[in-house]
Structure formats: structure tokens, C-alpha cells
Figure 1 (cartoon, helix red, strand yellow):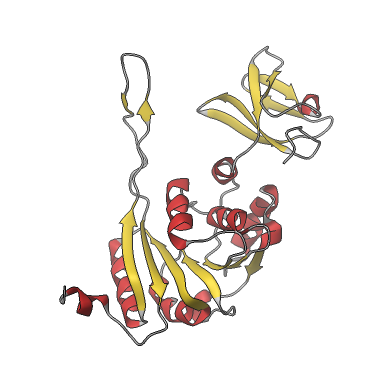
Figure 2: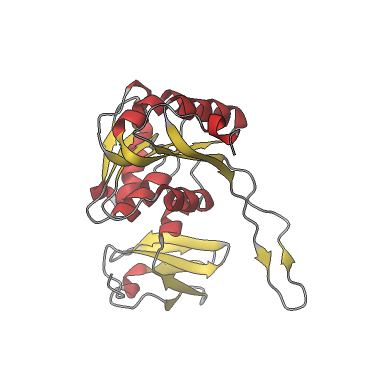
Length: 269
């Protein structure tokens, strides 16, 4: 990607760690903050990392947005999936360039954006969502992050079936993931991965039972907690507030063999 800012590019205006603004650079457009306004066209032709001064003589830094910035700055109709959970989903599922992924539901599109980012340039995310207002918001967010070309938004209830076949992964973030497990088993290629994000342990238990009944193996459930550090000379310590429980993530792999319960094998060790 070019390091020079062009008209139409997005930049992250950084004031401090708690005050950042994702804006689109356009001619004759100003961005107003409590620290004064910024003439955005002054950034055209400059390099990312350049400082720009507001009308109140306060300096901001124009940073190149990362995937994390696009996720946190999204238009929201629903709760987003946190980057800490997205990172585990990507790593454990084996998703990468060229992967074909089924996702449900789309929601605001935070997880959709991350999946699309990592399957580029040739992969595709087939994202199922039944609510029109969510699809419209997600579409805008995907366009903003420049990944819409790798996503097909689908108006369908995934609990009624999955259209795609031989996909690499199925990623679920919905209330009843166990209802989708049989459809995921049919849609996945051999050794493909299913991932389910659920906020409650009851959902996890029902999902794991469904996975065992449908011949999935390597079933694993994890929870990711994240705590920042306050780093100040002589006063370094964990921050008081932290991103605690957001949900449980269950992973499993499809086997082409007969039905196999890992509980049966666990007792034979």
C-alpha cells in the first residue's frame, strides 16, 4: 500500500491513546473536534505518520488505519466481536489467503471484516444474516475497510442450511449454534474447522454435544481475557479496568470417518 495519503483515503487522527478519529480525506472538508478543526485536504500528498495542526494549534498525527482501527471505529447496530477473540478465531481456524469461509450472523460486520482481510486476495467470506438493517450497516463497514470485494452477504437463516460446499471453515456467532452444526458438517471439507463464539456456557455445552454427535474431533473451548499495563516509571502496574469475559470460543475439526465421540477415547488412555 502507498505510504502517501490520497484523496478518498482513510486516516486515523491520533491525539492520544483514548482520543483517535477515523476520517476520510476529502477536499474542502474539515473535521471538527474539541481541540479545534482540521483541514483534511492538507493531508493529501503527505506521508502517513505526518503531524497536522488544528485551528487551536494542537497537533494530531495522521496514522494509517489498521484492521483493529476499522473494527473499533465501525458503525454499530450490534455488539462487535473484540479483536482479542478475533485473533484466536483466525489463528485456531487456519484461515488464510484463498480460504473459503461461511460466517453467521453478520451483525455489524466486525468479524466479517477481519475474515475478509485474511482471505484476500482470492478467498471469499459467505456471510449469512437474516436482518436487513444489520446487512446494510455491515455493507457500509466492509466498504470502509476496503474488503467488500471478498464478501458475499446472504439474506438467509443459516439454521435452515448452508448453500456452499467444501469450505475451509464455518464461523458462528449466533444464539443457537448447535442447530447449525449438522449443516456445517455437510458444508466443510475434510479436516475443515468449525468455530463457535458464545457468551454463555449453556450454549457451549449444547454446541459441544452437537459436535460430538456429528463426528467432529479436536473439540476445544477457550476463553480469552485481556489486561492492559499502565507503564509509568516507578509506577508500572496492571490497569484497574480490563476487558474480561466477552465469550467462549469452541473449535473443532471435521472428520470423514464414522461418528466418533472423544469421550469414548478419553477413558482408554
